[in-house]
Image (cartoon, rainbow, N blue to C red):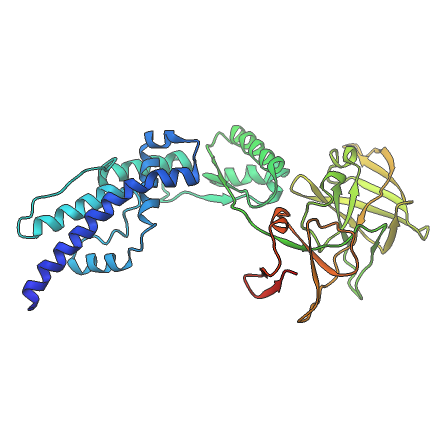
Length: 390
């Protein structure tokens, strides 16, 4: 068979593949909606949502060979169709049919909008998500907010004043209280500056984290390493959060909830440690809304008998004694965990396990532990380390 005859045959086969692909996309929509948003049938009433569903259905197919053939035929390879999936497919099919010996067009038009309408809709959605373009600028500025944005109003005010169009909150970090505080600070900064700034919440998927599991201690030792005289850091958490955080590198004190919920930067805890040495821990910064960082200048040893005095200075420099209290729960930094082939490793449901016989790690999703069965492999660190359940 010579090339002149083979080329039309390949073209007709390619057209049939495109038509089948176009027919398959709407058939996959119900399954996609059921996977992502089973309680949102109204998605089908929104053009942008419909096009996203078409795109997700399209990407369920391996298009590499088809795209190569389309490129060789001199038509769109569907690589830029994300804003108008069905319209692009219809256009490519129409062009291929028109060039194939006058074959009648098989439109079966299921597109929600044309390519030009898709571009206009994309521009409109960009404005709604990221705000309008400013004069003299060809792009918008989006800033991912750090944890400090939850309590540092001046930081957000400066970002908006300098031209931030969109504030991105990465929901893989911090917590709901932190996100709410960030949003409130953005709203306040917008009103002060008179500038618009949209807010983008970037939702996080499931992340399985591990942590060396250690039992709570009845004392806490803070000590400088060799010649390093930098202030010693300790995390100040609440009783409610004591076993649900992944902060194994920090020494931690679990404060009573009524004290933890009222902390402010600059607060100081004065105490006599177990050796009758006068010491103090000053609240220096906030990590999210559940954890504060305290700094202690000198080595100290604290236990459940240590009596703390919580003090706060007002704007005039007057010191107020807020409350006296003791702490019952401490967490020393987790030691290095070194395992060898054949060693036993306990997979614990919580970071605060009570077993000391085996090395242990806990999981951020304890329900996974309940699903393990004998003989299954468990892999850590992207498959670099493995263990068998016994």
